[in-house]
Every structure is written in structure tokens, then in C-alpha cells.
Amino acid sequence: MIFNKLARYGLILLIIIISAVELPFFYHKIVHKPAIGPRFYFSPITKNFMIMKHDKGGMGFYDDHWKSLTRREFEKYLPFQFYRDLSKWGELPDSIDGFAIDASVIHHNSDYYRIMGKDFDFPTIDLYPLFESQSDFAQLQFPGEFFRIKDKIDFITASSNEINQEMSEKFNAALIEAGFTFPAKLIAGLPTTKKPFDEGYFILDSQNDVFHMKKVKGEPSIVKTNIPRDLNIVKIVIQESVQQKIYGFIITANHDLFMISYDHYRLLPVKLEDYNAQKMDLSIAVDPFYVNFSYDDNTRFFSTICDSNYIKINQTSMSLQPLEEKLSEKVKYALFPFSIATYNSFSSMKKFDLKFHSSLSIIGIILSLIIGFMVKIKRREDLKSNWFDFVIISFTGIYGLLGIILIKTDLWK
Image (cartoon, rainbow, N blue to C red; front, side, top):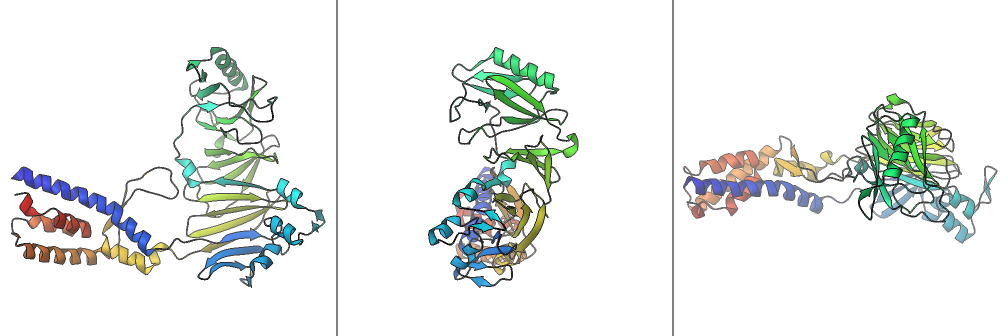
């Protein structure tokens, strides 16, 4: 009999866990409409922000004083972003502030990068292709070897899975000669052929020095950069851009952002208010005049504008109503005493985060106890011998109630 009871409570526990994952999730899907935040642009005409925002009637377009604009009026203030439409209308300016522009100039002086919160826990396979950076061909070709680097660097021939001793020894010697200290802590590159050229990899050694490694005409090219050791680097993001102004970005443990310039690896600091790299998505839009750093945590939205030399010239922010303050969320807290989250919008990994809700959950627990009592009376169950069911409901609320309703006692006597 005791084993029957243990089996029953085991099934109830399973129902509780599944319910704590799924019920709050479906509640959120049914009750909450997706919150779409504003998009900030910076106009070279007005020298101020322009805002695109979802309203009840659809998409709204505004200037920095929240004056409503038509879409056509809005785009006229943003020739760098909407130059194709303006060209079609015959309204693209010939010049702005004495700078001659046309569709080709704007296209070749624009770029876009993204640094996602998910990038920080994204699983990687520690095998990397090292492209030929001075290929004789127009398109990059995948090499026949992949390298791994920890206590030494090994190049592995993909077709035979054997170590290429000659290449491995050549690159090991070049790294040591450049002052590299094994093991490697961090490796950053863009291992794809879908890029205009290859800049190799930036590698952080055990002494926190950053090295730039490339393959040039089959030979190693290793540069020890002058990037300071004391930055406490947690992420390097490489972005090979046709503009060839920056190699990419460095993010530190303090969420400081630096751009690695082509000027002898000089760091360009970017001051971003309240930026948290692991909990925010950052987009960087470059146009002929400005660089727009836009980032958000789904509730707070920020935009910092720098000039073409990455000097800050303006910033703005906007906040949506926090989810916790909405009536629907308070109802959720009353219904569900806790929830188990398996998904985080800023993580690439499945989670199992137990989150206890507010004291409002007492309401849901009391209602669950009343319903549980009524169900047992209707089923004519012995309340005294099944007292532990009410203990379960007292701690788990609606989840425990669901389990006790589904797993009847008379089947487990």
C-alpha cells in the first residue's frame, strides 16, 4: 500500500513540475500581446532623434517633440536609412552639410552589426577554420584544416582527422616567438565564407594579452596587440566590414564596450548608459555621418549617437510599462504560486529557473484548497487518510490541485 501511495505522489509531483512550466507560459501567450519597443533614428536634417513606434492604430512616426508625421514625411528626415524610397520619389538630397551624397555613397558608407545577449552562452565547438587572408581568388575558400588551441595549437586535416604536424609546428613557433603564453583563454573570429575578406582570429592568452592571428600566403602572421591586459575581457566580437575602420568589439566584465580600430588596434571606448551585455541586445547602425548604438532589455530602450569618429553627441531612452506592474501579471501571481522558466530571451540555452511569485499567491492557494476539499467531498474520499493531499496544495496551489484531481486516490489503494 505504501508503494502505491509513493507511486501516486510521484505522478502528482511530475504533474506539478510540468504544470509549473507550461501553465504560466500559456497564460502569458493568451493574455499578453507582444510588446514592441520604439526604434530610434538620428536625422542629419534636424540633428535630432526621430521615433518609430507601434501604436494602437498601427505604426506611428514622430519627431523628437512627439509630433506625429506621415511615413513619407518621416522618411524625408532620414535620407541615409530610406534613400531607396527617396531616390524613387526623386527627393534624395544632392548633399547634406556640404557632403555630396547619392544612393551609391550611402550604401558604401553604411553598415550594421549586432551583439546579442545570447552570444555569451552560445555553445561552441572548439575547432576553427583559418582562411587564407590573401587568397588569389575573389571568394574565400574553406581550408582543408581546422585548428584547436589550448596548451598548444593543432591543425587537424578534415578529410583524414590527422594532425598536420608541419602547419601546427609552424604556427606554434610563430605564436611563441610573438610572446604568446599558453593556454588560450578566448578565441574570436568569424568562421564563415560569407564575408568580404578574412581578418583571422583575435586570441586572448593566459596573461590576458590579445594576439591577432592570420594566415598570409600559407604562412602565420601573428601580431601582439597593444590592447591593455587589465580590461577583464569576457567577449570579443569580430566583424569584417568593407569600411575597414574597426576589426570588431570588446566587452568587459563591467559591461564596458570598446571598438578595435584598424589604427594599430587602438581601442575606441563607447559609453553606453545602463548597458548590460548579457541581458540586452545591441545593434550598431553606421551611416555616412553617425553611428547609432541601440540596445534594450525588452522594457527599457536606449539609443546613443556617435559621430563618424565614435565621439558621443546625443542619447535618448524610453521605457515601456514593466510587466510586473500590469494587472494581468498580478492575476498570474495570484493564480500561480511559482513558475519554472525554461526559456530566456537573452540566452541560447534551455533553463530550469524556479521563480517564486508574490504574496498574492495566497489567494490562489486558498481557492485551490477550497476546490480540493469540495472535489474530495463529491468523490466521497476519506479526508483523514488523504490529509497529505492538502499539504501538497498548500505549497503548490493550482499545480497540486490539478495533480490530485487527475490522480485519484481510489486507483492507488
